[in-house]
Image: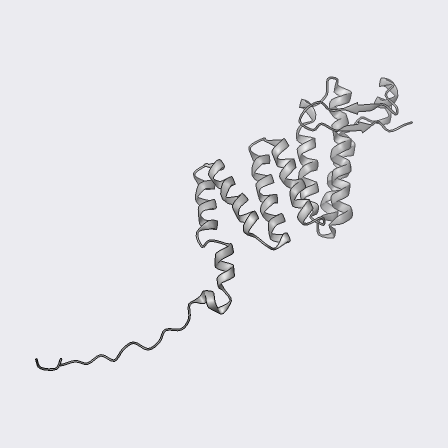
Length: 193
């Protein structure tokens, strides 16, 4: 048979894939489609599926700051759907990975303040929730200089909504411990006069 008219040289050796050049660990840790899947499921209001992907990305992530950001994002999503107990749990988990994340404390303070009318039997007890919110906002101010001004403003606002000295005296609650049997599950001691 006659030789072929066109002779193609064998292809040059291809460079090693990215995995062998040190980038493989990144791709193995964080699957390429993960952020897109989270966003798509969020947009479709498929929160269970999105939460599954968020939790997987937390497990795969090695940077504690990034883990904290993901956890904070989940906490915010639960807050927006009025699932305050879950929101606080995720905010607290974010603080485990980044103790200086003041916005997580501020989120918790906001959760408490948003629940004032649902916690407590009397008006005095309901307004006492603001002491918890104030305390959490002050924590945010003390650990995170980037939000100090906002956190202190929020703390003062919460303190202004808490029972006044006149209310404490009128109700005779000075030094009393008030336990919140709602989702908060904490107690606060009324300031003494």
